[in-house]
Image (cartoon, rainbow, N blue to C red; front, top):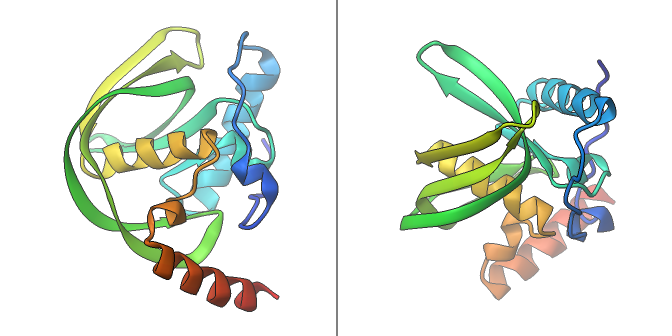
Length: 165
């Protein structure tokens, strides 16, 4: 297992459209294990492959439950149905130290393939629904700051870019 470097804004890889995964190889399995370790060490709820510089459609999500925490990798995930909306605070491992309230679907139905090649389907709401939406946005080259109003986005860019210089 290896800890991977998380790319941060404004790295252009974060804006790339991730390519679908055609075959689950040992390399993909190893990458998913490394992504889970990296996500947990960074204390994230999820991580998309392009956040570590590899523009492929792979995400890892931390599933928190009554029986303990379990992380899983999902290949080629897509949201097929959304319901209702809610506003909640979000942050991002690729935009460290910045948090903002973002409107997203409250409930989502997600489909994909698990790391063993089996169909993955889930219906979830709240925090987990938000995590899926956030990570799938990454695969589409979208960041949570894109949901900010133009005025807030400009303020963010000025402050954040000044801070990282």
